[in-house]
Image (cartoon, rainbow, N blue to C red; front, side, top):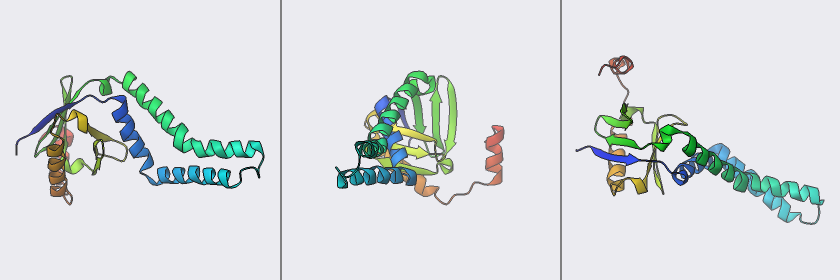
Length: 179
């Protein structure tokens, strides 16, 4: 199979979509939504029974994870895009049988397929996690019409390496720069 090359320059909306998915598709995210909806239900069910202060507090708790936190996440993403040179500059990705090569401004990093913990195929892109908080973000709109090909290739590689355990020599070779 030939290599797949594409460039990604993250925009605020793409980073925000990833952050929202990452935040709310976890146990803590689901729990926070549950708290918000329970507060909203309690506020509506007891409307007029409690003091104005209690009702306002319930409205605040209801909006905390459904309105306030998403607004804060958006502001954080916008600030991160503005401040971070690494995110602002285009990342060039090359997907191959050997792994994912990421290059930017003359620097290059190779990530082996067995280092990818999981792949998430979302509505607006693919997220490849190397750790619980580090991921490659491949927005659908920036894959130059190769999105389906990229998804198929990632699925194939993830399936190939799902039970793979690297040999000690491979791990040691990576640490010293040898292949």
